[in-house]
Length: 374
Image 1 (cartoon, rainbow, N blue to C red):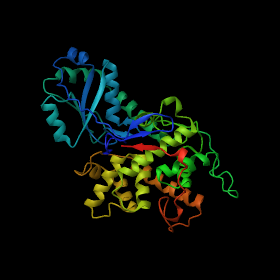
Image 2 (tube, rainbow, N blue to C red):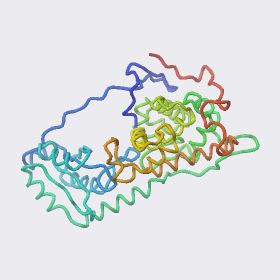
Image 3 (cartoon, one colour):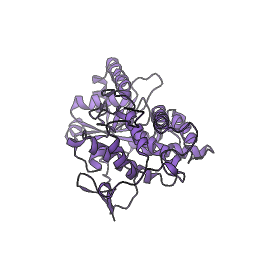
Image 4 (tube, helix red, strand yellow):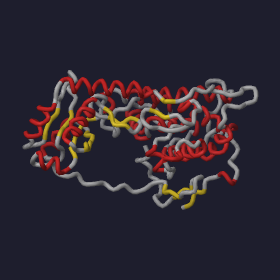
């Protein structure tokens, strides 16, 4: 989710827990090795190179988890022979065929119409096809489908206690963590009540919540996100550290969508990216432009987020990150907006939403501000 950040690599942030981190680093792109000539060479290399298409039956990433029926099946085969699996997503079947022809991949994963095994192999790798054929059975494919079904069924599951969405409406108390939302929401450039609404959507105010994908705490921070922001894993369930990390991440996302002039519209994109990844949201914006819609208006882009569940659209040339579970992201934004209206007393369809305007919260005190230096 942080891969498309383009801020100055020299910019650092001092976090509340005392570490100084760079907002963005430079990734090193590793060259792809050539495929082995024998089964023993494959085992010695330690990895199986796979080229695939994006899609629910082939391969996609969801909340930091790699999914797809064919992917899960191939992962089981890799475990069977004792190697790791390395995946490269291609634009189309022609690109997969080209990689196999150039020996830049061992296996090509292509979803068949009937959902059966449809793997292709690199040149001169009949020995690999023979190994897969001896290992494969229809029962293995059935097991992969059942595992995918079980994982996606858990996608809405968070192990948590359910607390009331508002502690005391008469006194204006939303939760036991209001003081933390008030402290860190200004850094995220949002109303503290909006951050509270997002928190309830994520964890129902349970600081010990944990999702099936490994997201932790009040704001359901992924361990990988925590690491990139300088937070140690043993502090993921600390309410203050968790909320502070979410605020930092929300601010980064706000910067990523700084080209959206309307602050209230931008917030919808920020929330969507928090849930579904900024790359997917940029894909939806590109689709919106191509279809003549307003790519800076959430209601238009939300329609394209839903379209990214269909092959015609997630394989469109303007789409870079492929398939996404768009309905969940659209619902996520809608639920937070609705709860925020309840928390703030804003009538549906009126006023600004969370950023700017007369409802912008007061700045944090000096002691609670992040220190940003170039």
